[in-house]
Length: 103
Image (cartoon, rainbow, N blue to C red; front, top):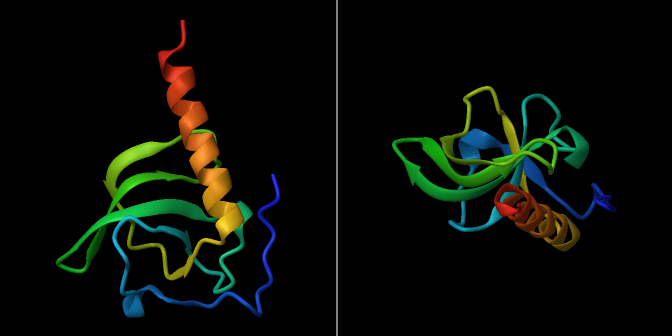
């Protein structure tokens, strides 16, 4: 799984300045503004209400996914996912769903 990125091409910013595009994948980090993928919460933002982000699906390990939860206030930085990260997320989410329903 290649989730490498060039930090010069990606910009992260404090979550207070976050203006999400609903349905997009973002990476959130508690302390590192670079938001390295191996240490982040990966999440698809579904709603933004009263200053709280509601996630449609999210993971911290690309193996175990949770649905419909609020992003913790402990997360301070956010950046958009790369195309490669979006591919990895989509593939692993589909794999996890299939594994739940296999006999």
